Length: 340
Ligand code: SAH
Image 1 (cartoon, rainbow, N blue to C red):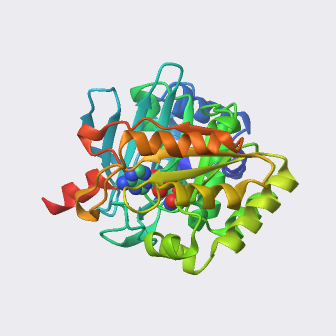
Image 2: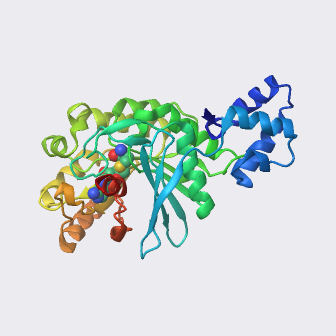
């Protein structure tokens, strides 16, 4: 059975009209699901009993179930969910001074096998449905009012394009959580055709591209996707995206000791992106993942990398690592649960 959380307001209206109901009933249902946040159709007290029963017969509401949560000293909280088919996914709430960010998964496992990431280790299972994506946000929002969403959990969002874009449209709508598109970030490992496809969307989301190296040989070693979409193809897609949308791209760059964090790597990065008009670099000291045998560089090297970017007028931020004590990096909780 399908969950009602996978439907847009328009789709729900359509169904209710076909049942002989009036269109505004769909708004009422949305309000119960997204604003009053009930967990059962029977609680939707301004709908007739027969409509409530019919909804219950045809749809589920929540079909992901929390089975574990861990909270970090810094407030970051991570949740492990079981899906109706028994698969596991994880999501994270990251509170900071001025925002509460929800980090959402888009797939069960990941195909991409980036060498520093825990998500790919146990392989790929399937795409999440739009409903499963929405339910993570609903669940987190019930826990703590979320202001921002990043698709930086497990999976490659642009490989599950339609479900992700539909989920963004639903969660963005004022009848639902009303989270502004500018507060929603899609993060891709560099699926160039997907980046090009995003150009045509009428939504003002943010785009991050996980770059991690400006050298094809190094990038192919740590991100196998680089063999399919090497840097020249990826950067051409980014350039087109920036030119046609007028929007910025953030390059995510995980700093890994003895691999991509020396001055030479930074010079290559500058050369690769300096001519793109609207870019920013987000430096992330690698989170240690036991299975991946990687380490962040020392503080001095991180500073040097950052200073070199500023010297070349490339805006760079250094992301503070969050939730290290709870294995909050991509896929770590699921992995440790599976091992048990
Ligand atoms: N597949 C998408 C989104 C999921 S990964 C992508 O690649 O962008 C989200 C971010 O987490 C990526 O930038 C990824 O490189 C980063 N990441 C994964 N493992 C990490 C680790 N061990 N330390 C720091 N960042 C990591």
